[in-house]
Image (cartoon, rainbow, N blue to C red; front, side, top):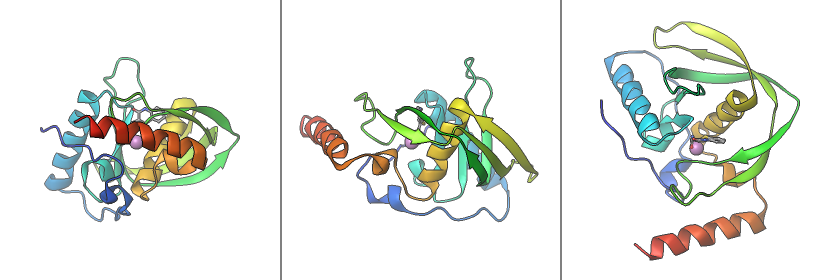
Amino acid sequence: MAVLEILQYPDPRLRIKAESVTQIDDDIRKKVEDMYETMYVNQGVGLAATQVNIHLQIFTMDISDTRDKPLCVINPEILTKSGMQYDYHGCLSVGAGLGISDKLERAAKLRLRGMDLDGKIFEWDLDELAAICVQHEVDHLNGILFIDHLSRLKLDRIRKKIDKAQRRV
Ligand code: GNR
Ligand code: NI
């Protein structure tokens, strides 16, 4: 296993749209293992392949308190969404370590279809943090960041924070 480098906004590679996985082989399994390790080392709730410069429809997630229930979703499809929740968002690719977060409106519940590492198709009904995380990761796979959903004013504030931190390096 290996810890992969997480691309940081405004890296243009975060805007690349991920392609579908057509076959699960050793290469895909290795990539998922590396994504798990990268997610845990960085204490993320989820990680999209895009963030580690792999442009395939894959994300990993662990919403357990014990951090020992890794999930992997290949070719995710959000089938239905309902309700609304308004909660804080953070992202490992947006000012990592700077504590950047903001509130965002997201569907409260959703039905997710995906494929597991055995190539089996499943459907899950998710809510709360799981639903937020899935919407966040599916956005990544489409080249979208949570800050794209914020007002210009809030985005400017975040960009200034990131610029300032980068100038210090
Ligand atoms: O670790 C993460 N926490 C989080 C908190 C609220 C909303 C979304 C997230 S996902 C984020 C990890 C990440 O950047 N995944 O792409
Ligand atoms: Ni993210």
